[in-house]
Amino acid sequence: MEALRIAEEKGLDLVKISPTANPPVCKIMNYGKYLFEQGKKAKEAKKNQKVVEIKEIGLSMTIATGDMQVKAKQAQKFLTSGNKVKVSIRMKGRQMAHSNLSVDVMNRFFELVKDCGMKEKEPTTEGRNVWMMLAPVKA
Image (cartoon, rainbow, N blue to C red; front, top):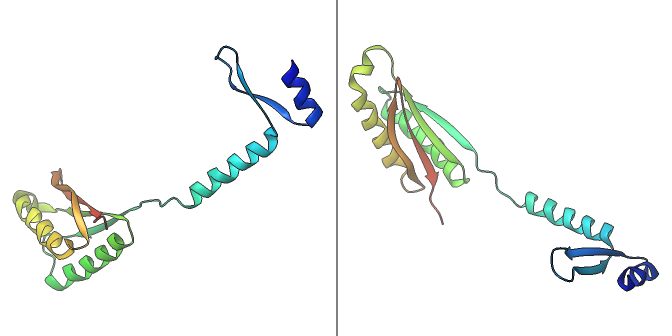
């Protein structure tokens, strides 16, 4: 009761910090200002947060060397900016019988980007698709 009287005299609020303790722990403060400061801190933390996006690059089993280098350069740009890259190949028709060739294409692609990315997930075949996930290398 005395704490409540002191808080009212100062024009502040009496806030229970730990109500389950015996006796309960309270603090005299301006609760509105406290909530405002907490909101400001949360906004600042959210602003400084980096959202990692997943960018996708599509290859084909019969991709030419020059085309693969262009795609690798694009993947390097994504990885250096801190994004993850999903590399996928969609097989068509008779390519399904030779899915091991698409894994070879994936490995050749990884050799081009291994200096700025690492394999987060090895190439896996799921139905018609073969895909792998690359993550940026930690500095």
